[in-house]
Length: 158
Image (cartoon, rainbow, N blue to C red; front, side, top):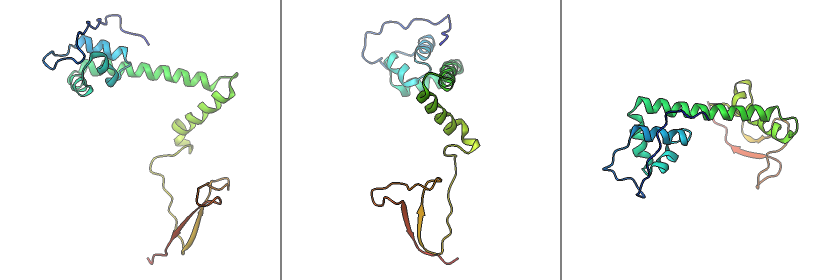
């Protein structure tokens, strides 16, 4: 992570919890945000304040919001580098395969992989049992029935 060169050190804090009467300082909050990659809960621990107090302070400052956003963006950039490294890992097939599955289930949703938002199954039946299986025909294993999931229903008159 590339830290800004002008970060100010966080002063030593002789208390277990910062007193409410002692206001937060923009520079120390900025430093805590960068040290904790933009994580408010972790920055709050570093500053010895409640996360809700720190969140209110950050939300009232466009500068701190921008700093938090940039720190989080740099964290995401690093994570993307790791994804790319794992996808092209010729020495560790399990790592490569695991990352491929992750990428397809998240970024590949628009291509039909993973679970897309709002997908549902509508089943119109004349009554009786409905057997649900995986797309390859294998049964969904349940404690009640090793052959699949049976949903009992009634026929509704339309």
